[in-house]
Length: 218
Image 1: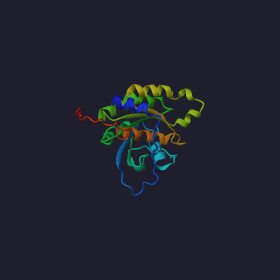
Image 2 (image 1 turned 30 degrees about the horizontal axis):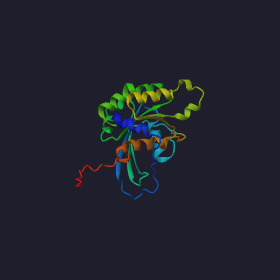
Image 3 (image 1 turned 135 degrees about the vertical axis):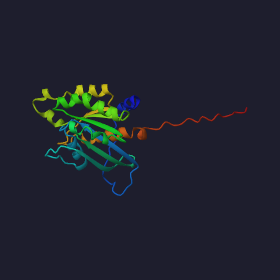
Image 4 (image 1 turned 45 degrees about the horizontal axis):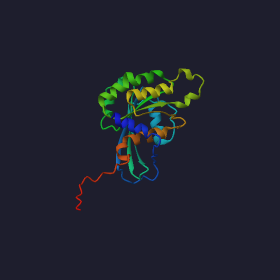
């Protein structure tokens, strides 16, 4: 896992784009599942709606259990069936969340940049939980509501550099921040998650050396 994280970090500069265009009626070659966790009201559902529907929901509705499925085309022409699982962050739903942790390809732990409590809970609550149920699944840390950095009282917000350090310390393969409202970097978040899930499939294959011995007669 550590080797995958290190190798993936070195390739983060070239994340391929996955598009919903032209995928109707085509069969998927890859089937991926991404589970989104984090404190309640940090914006997890808004992130998923912003990505899958291209719009921002103005009203807050607490999530109990929800999932979204969409087909995407990658740069290699292969179709990816992407299942996005939303989870409830409230304590009263802690017994339901483990139902989401089966056959996961990437775990996305979210916090809101204007909620230091949600950021601290990454290590206090969410990391222990996902490590218990999904010990070998790649983890990414995602800061939501990044558009709020434009406001004046940013001293109360989570420091992006500290978040980056935390992500590295806990072994997350990446830390990203995005805005579901403006859609800034939302697609990058999911393109990165898909690339991580398909890392072994997409990385360049080393040419196999011919191990057969040749006999030379002089």
